[in-house]
Image (cartoon, rainbow, N blue to C red; front, side, top):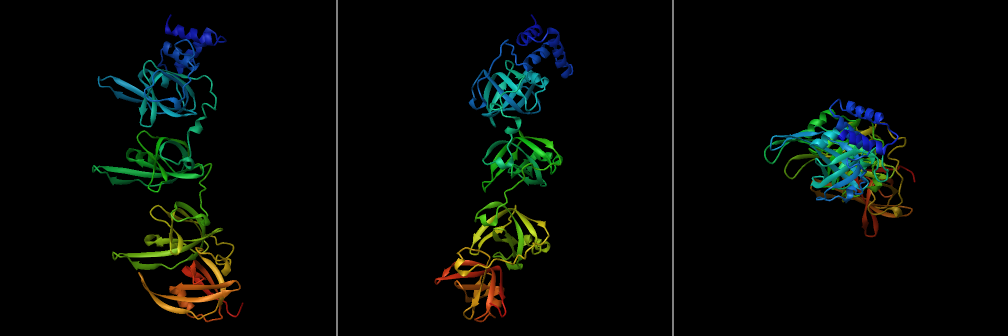
Length: 504
């Protein structure tokens, strides 16, 4: 009996409701789908495979799971869901014969693995038109160690069948569950990722250690409430031309690496594939990791903060130790939880020309530093400051809540107090790294206590004119450690002294 007749007999045994004529018609449909490339025998075997019937004339029910596989295992049978089908590759063997290899990424509830099909088995799988999401049964495979983990190889003895009915979603999760979002990526390792391109950066060139020229480019992917950078190297940079902001991508076999600051980024290697799912779309779950100012801590990096501009400081020019000129300016950013200074250095200062009080701005990829004057936010190499809205706030931003002296605590920043001067200000010159500056100190009281206030530079000039009995309001000052049992306040870049004429 021919293989063709044997296949028909096996199908009829397993499917008694089908007549011989119906089975032959289904075989002819298989041949038509393969554009005439299949023989009668091959088409009959593929139809049997689709129905879950092996050449051994009995069903083999795989019991192994991907998580059980280890290199060295032989005669492995396993069921899994197809996650991705890579392009078939042809190659020349040492003896001059042509070889073929087809890779599929497959998975079950215990993990994922690459299925590697060789020669005739690869041709058969292509003819079956296996697609992501479908279930397959793999028979008589052997396990090898691959670059991304274990690989299941099928040679001439191996077989691949498409499962006729879907398996339990508990054992074999749906296709989407094998892809994580940028918000899910934490540690290093292999990853399959899905997200929307929100930023596209130009490629750049560099010289490698061997003197050759390399290329690198970056995309920012957003989904699942998070963002992550994709890093494209060398030949992968060419794919940048077809990728645009608003495209939903799937990244198969990406490699997560941790930067020096322990933040992950996904690198695209030769074995990584990109699939465009949609265009002109937006993340289903947009990036939402904006940090409130009150939650900022020294040392935090890659923070996203938004708020309104409450104060804009003067640009200060100076010379560094090496003689090079520098510039620095500060912005006071305020949200509903507090305020913080944004320090702008050198070329960053240019953005001040576009800013006005009350503008709503957004800091991306900022880093938080700590110092004598408390926390501040810096942009650095990766950070950016964007204008979200040029509409002024409904309430004046300088209408800060006045804090009573007894409620002040060390470390508070940009607070506003109100009180009466109780002693004549003391003025002296102080030598600093940026030259001689004036320092004016005085005491004031309110109904809850007495505080010592020290102000520098411009506020120091204003404070020299104060006299005992003046009622003043001091805005945007910082609370330091107590001095001789008194609350101690000092000025910052946005400190203002307002004298309330003739009123309590």
